[in-house]
Length: 387
Image 1: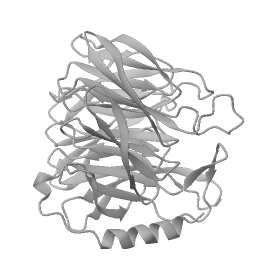
Image 2 (image 1 turned 30 degrees about the horizontal axis):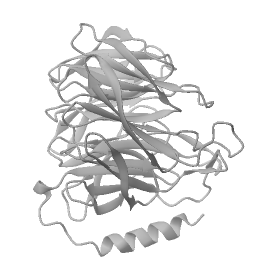
Image 3 (image 1 turned 30 degrees about the vertical axis):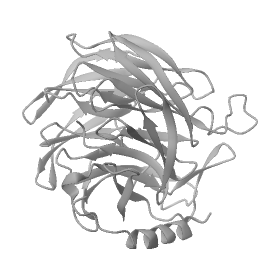
């Protein structure tokens, strides 16, 4: 399918890139790219002899955004597009691999349990280790102080807790929800570091965890939003969170929900019919807006009644306990994750179909596509350091 030639061309291009003068002025975004799965005629298909998965390190602090480097790292489109985490000091990035090639059958995949550690300050960036976590790891997040990491393991109904020391990670326990089919999808800390939320798309719950130092416990409290709560983003102000619900994937309109974090326990306070399959959600750095990537039927067969030849990005303002529509733009198909620049004016939206990131500009009222960044594979997950 041309994957090897694409990667080779990308490697050559990366080798000729100038070294940025200072990482301190950069804003690091990391895109995890899956080469094992493609969409052909609206059907997902396993690539029998794929190029290695990759992670692309991007400077989002310049205009247009610039690729710094690319490394080989296991990645997977299965799971939330927040399958990447960047440390608060931008020293390391983490990428989960929910699936790997099945060694017994070239046409199938099997669950993985690997978390890759990338030194993003090295020139060129480099993989410096892997850590075993639970089965089918998906969403991953650092605590605000960078001392803890949570990994949602969709394959076994658990959340791994890891301690961070410098650039090394060690196990600090595991939270078991008691239901292997609960499919924890993403885990995110609140800005004060005292709580975390976990989406569970297998049993439609959002769990509330308590955090005390390096001790993380399940409070047994939970919320019920829509069908299959999935991606999750928390405002930098710590007042609200937004969750996207995968729905049934049949071409129906799906929901995003607003969570009031000031209530104890947190509660769902608003719901918006956003579109078909809200794959990724991302709060703006100032906590006022949320961007949502929508499949919009772009991964369906052309004969499907819900098919469109493009995905969508929509932006809503979080205000007064409501989500208020602001703007939308057409983007590449089979969209995944989305991130914001620090000034809230530039966004990167992933397109598995295009094997690229769409660059979008936002002025508070209008949203428009301004460019594209090619990456070495199907971009399946992306994050920046959280504000």
